[in-house]
Amino acid sequence: MLSKSMKQYVMNQEKNGYNKETQNVYNNRLKNYAIDALKDLALLAEKLPEDELKDIFNEKTMLLLLRNVFRAKLKGNYEEKEFDQRRQRILRLSWDILSVIGFKDNAWNLAPDVMNILIKAGLHETFDTFVGLKAIYIKEFNQNDTNVTKHEQGGE
Image 1 (cartoon, helix red, strand yellow):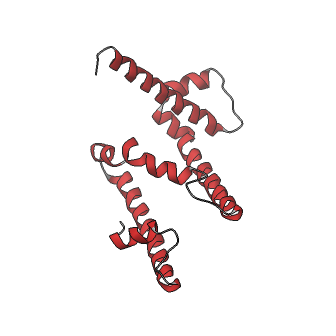
Image 2 (tube, one colour):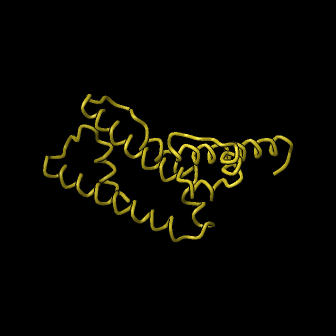
């Protein structure tokens, strides 16, 4: 997505050697390139078959991005105003993401057995999304636990 010169610009925290006009040009390009790249990734996530998606959207490729997008404080010093703006943006984005992930229809598709147990058990939450998030979390926790046990026993 980024050229070598654009990466150098991003990595140069003080922006030494870049006048204000050049900085504005780079900053606008960076935003536009990033937005276009995210739209392209969304299209791939929607249209590619799973055997291709698993190589693109997985723990290895996504974890660094997710950590940096959702971590309140990254390396470096923040002015209080900047930190508050970052915190507010991350909270809004987190709300949206968690709502999409925990939406009941999505949770039923991802973890139908656990959703069935939670609903039959009469689990009630202030927000329905919490039930879906719990189901997904429990399902993946159980899958990880099962995979670790199989590996320890010499299977798969």
